[in-house]
Length: 77
Image (cartoon, rainbow, N blue to C red; front, side, top):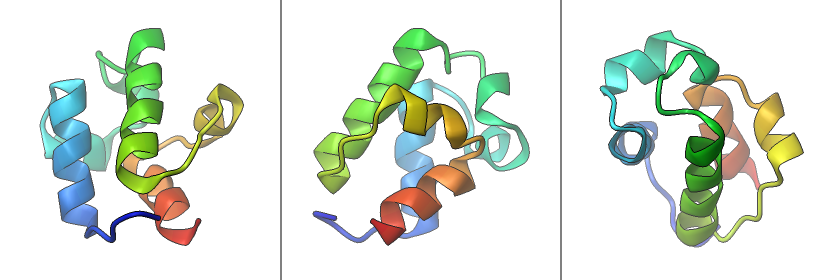
């Protein structure tokens, strides 16, 4: 990982990217976020690559259902 961030910082980055509120990310599955469509998933994968140096395939991304799942993935890799 290129940089350690807190869960709150991660939520802020993800919320900005998906143009939603952090509270939505904390309470909903990613697929329930309107901007988490096919383009949104690609943007999330790019965000993770740019900020954490991790390549995340679409298959891996599809198994991560919540923002907390995503954070858990990037913080343990």
